[in-house]
Length: 276
Ligand code: FPP
Image (tube, rainbow, N blue to C red; front, side):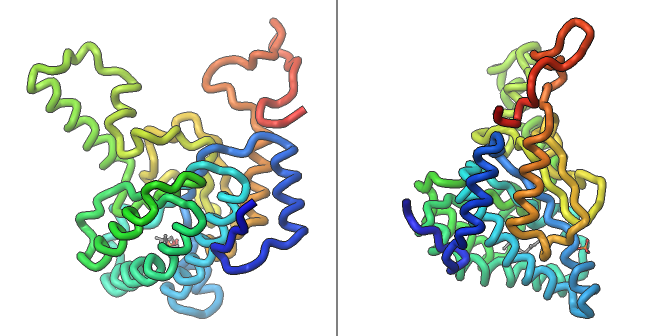
């Protein structure tokens, strides 16, 4: 198998074993979405400036992307910059943009070599021109890759996504090409920025906040939620494995009853995500 070198390190035997055990234990989520939170508080706890937290956060992005690819996760969506983040002090916003540009410059080739496709959702046009250029180059370079799709949500919000979908559907109605009675869940999903991607199986939020913060509002309807106290810069592969273990212990019913329940509602089968 191809050697994976996104972090420029050789994978340890111990880590290979952990991944193997995780794969044996149950289903690996096909799509993981992450609200990367706590960079600022992490930096503060180290007596450092917020931007330092974002910089170390990029190391977490690299480690999580690499371990997801190794585990066979097919889609990883990261909330990197929300529409609300524009309201932060301009020095921090500028710092984040610079970090994005320098990270893309450093990592795009590496993503490509490792068969990872990078895409974005959100209002990329709001970003500075140099940022847009770097993003577009990484998107173009990696467009045919198939191992893992890494999606960066940039100037993204769930409400923006739904609003845009509604506008597009309303246009079809206005042009007389669509009967409003035919609008359904599937049609709305097909007009979202994530149209070609399955809904997240697992949503992870770091830093202990119990909020969705305007992330993939429509798409998270039946996602399993995992919240950890760890700040994003401390969230590395071992923490990801814990999140997946938790996912494997869930019984996903999608609003229905458990297929294995008897008439008294007693479970007659093992948890769905857990292998027998
Ligand atoms: C949340 O922490 C984090 C962000 C708003 C930005 C996330 C960005 C990165 C990890 C770096 C760039 C990303 C890529 C993909 C290259 P916070 O600042 O809200 O922390 P706080 O809640 O403790 O203040």
